Image (tube, rainbow, N blue to C red):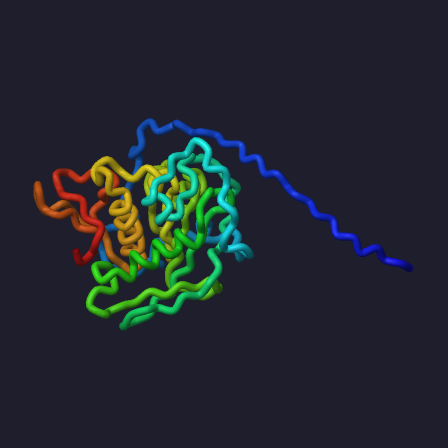
Length: 261
Ligand SMILES: [Zn+2]
């Protein structure tokens, strides 16, 4: 029997149907804190359903060719955060792709292993997003302040905290029973779930400093995973605590992204 070894080169043209979702009415309604102000470990409010119905799949190609840049004015700050398109598609399939790679924790203290996942279908550079997350957490102003902790990245099954970037609909589902409407990020068990809606848009209170807001939301949601509860604005003109729900409004406080600014 003869086998014909012919290579078939198939080029698939991916047409991404972009559904611009402009439903931003009542963006903050029904939202409530991810944890009560206590220092209970994260696992106490874990909802197995939110953790269990998503798939882990390693991503084979860390650097995909950039998609068509049409119509989305992606800034340098956006690219730093992994954003390749500012179009927000409300519904994707809910499949989470783990950003491949292991990165050794650079600092001192207890090592926290962070697994970073991006929902399949989001136009995101997973490696850039993961680096943004880890750079934030390893900043001296973050939770490792003073050499108490340091954060490494893993793509394996064993981790301490999982940071997920997901579409509004998927994040809303993963945040249940907390109601976020896909407009707020949350922490559920060991997962810090960031909604792409807010990752792209940030909040007016940070002005043009979208990077500052993105650092804030990483620090805030991972702060919950580390056991930190919410804090209030200490007074008009004062610096907002990182564990204040700044996305809901700064209430007279100055924006602040860091636990140890
Ligand atoms: Zn919170």
